[in-house]
Image (tube, rainbow, N blue to C red; front, side):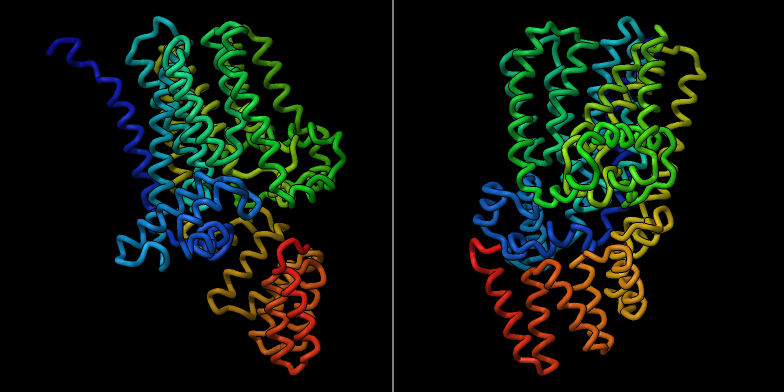
Length: 526
């Protein structure tokens, strides 16, 4: 056989990456919907999907739903709902949903992301390591793509149905970068295609606003675009991104709660703490959880805020100071740029619970993946390749171990409480999961702990009241429901209170609750 015949085609490496990624995450297709933890409000209890119509699709594009403007993701869920019902012989407009199709979409999206990561890394490695053997570049790119795809931080967005917004947004973002940098300079057709993919990424999840910054880093190094080229190609992306932030941030009214957690001047410190956290979890992914409780006020009270930022700064200084390591500033800058929208400089909803979450690192992991690719591509010595293979293997093992936790809500929130015992959110969801399984007495005890930690949570009072009602403790249940309505009335809590007041023979209380319900359902009322 000739020497040329022994060379493995480059596309076989990409195929290997895709197959391994799909096989590792395929077990999640058997996972159910979570009764809550966003799967309910986004999918299986979303009225626009439970009663699906073209008007539902229009509603997703005309304005935010559940404080999120992610119309492409919601439209994808709507399409999956219609397909699920059609395959089960049901009317596409209503009926039960098969969670397997939704999980399958996440796995498929992540598999495509892994393949796109390989293509992007292969392009970047070729630019950084001019003259390196093609086979080494292919191997380096494949190992980097597997690092991206198999990192345990990716379990949350892939195994969680609601994580499709992160997977879809990240997949489209990677596609935009692959198209944009597919040639030395983007001509009009290439730029137009990349821009459309960028817009689609924004419509899947607003975190896509980071793409102009990520592209800007790569345009400078290794592609060495001129300032004029960067301005003309990425300037419009930046303008679109700013406008998108203004559009979507107004939808997150709960973000106003995050604004008051710490003074404005501490936000750069919050961002530094979050970046340090992500660096640590990327390098040593142990103690992962659905809720880290790392809210701005918590890190300020704990004192981490004042020194955590030193880690990323020290790393940047080291890479800048050592000439041989300066090339690795690019992966670090890509990592930071991709995370920027969720570092806390601009408040967002989930910050009330935690600034950091595994899913926010989805696209950002392309930065460390690039670093690993460059290490292998630039080091012909066998130890570097062996170390990279061992790293990917270790990540694979950790991901396989973590994936089953997302198969059941009780498992997930029990594991979260082991990592973060103070998580009122995980405790609330754990209690709800116990109640869902008929363990209401145990659930009520847990919910009492939630209220002790979060005495201003109207939702906790509502759920605790329902549990107490099931246990036959009716007077206490009514008092708890009244407290929920007083803290923050919602149609659900007002309706529950009306039913309870009726059942205990208090028509005056029932009428008052119904009046509150009517006010809440009146358009334009607060």
